Image (cartoon, rainbow, N blue to C red; front, side, top):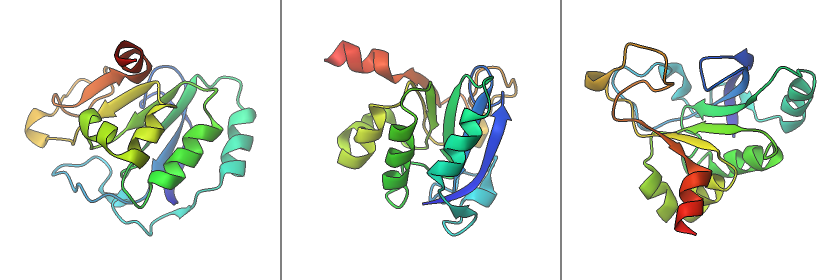
Length: 156
C-alpha cells in the first residue's frame, strides 16, 4: 500500500492532536474532493510501519491516529490498512472512508478493520451537502461520525 503523506501532528482529522496517514488511491472520485491528489494509487511512498512507529513514539502529545485518503478500505489498500490499524490498536483510531458502515460490515476484509477503529467517518463527500463549519470533522452532511466500538457492543 502506498501512503500519499503523513502528518506528525494535526487537529483537523479528529479530536486532540493526532498523527494522520493519508493513503494513496481512490476510485470514488467525489466531485469537489478535498484531496484529489490522493486518487492515484501510485502516488506517494510504500507504507513504512517502522517509521510511523518511531514518529508516534517520539511525540507524547498525540491523542490518536487518523487514517484517511484516498480510500483506506479500497480492495487494493485494505490489507495495508488492516496491518496499520492492528499495529496501533493501543491508540484512539479514527478512519475516514467513502464506503458506508453497513457495506463495510458485509465485506470480510473491510469488516476486519472495524475491530481496531474507535470512530468511523463514513460516506462519500457530496459537494451539494458541504459543511462550511469545520467543527465536526466531516466534509458533507451525509457523512456520519460513528462510534464503532459502541455500535459493535450493541450488536454483540
